[in-house]
Length: 112
Length: 114
Image 1 (cartoon, rainbow over the protein chains, first blue to last red):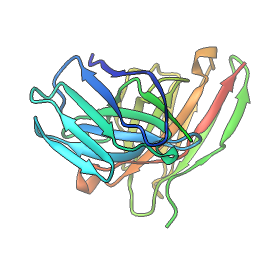
Image 2: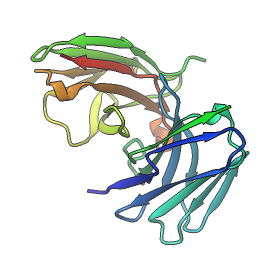
Image 3: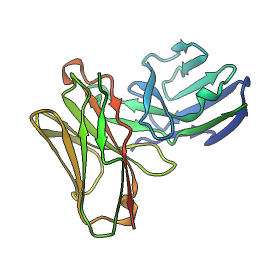
């Protein structure tokens, strides 16, 4: 059974700070997705990465996929209060795309 | 364009009871998946429905069952509720023809079992 561990579990920072959260898998990812879940809402897809070493940018968010496709990081530059939420990584299995294995999550709190 | 709609948003049950949760997929989607999210955890896959059939199932007991209707909406049923069934139940819809590559999640139904 694949295990996805995310670190840190909790992160509380002030607006304007930079941060990085990590996702590590016990086995190679089929393809990796990052989601953000705000309180009272379902997860929302941020990005999908497939190729080892791939880097994707989404405004202030930078996603990096490890060369061996077993780890990933999400870096946020100049965090804003709107970035507050639960950040989840997930493995999307090829051919069975609806079945996601999610990580344990990193809960981010950004304050003024 | 309405997204995924789930009902009820919150409910409280006692051990041993049965519960039914409902989901209406996003317009244009024909596949529904259900996830259980315990407090402080990531969601766990329960099962997926397409063409009114269960297509995949996660590691959940038979107490968890589902149904998909011709209009693509879906129900999740849980029998003989246990305290450990307390969780947020998320429904996600997608389009089978595109490989179900992008899931749209609903806001969830929060179940508390006392």
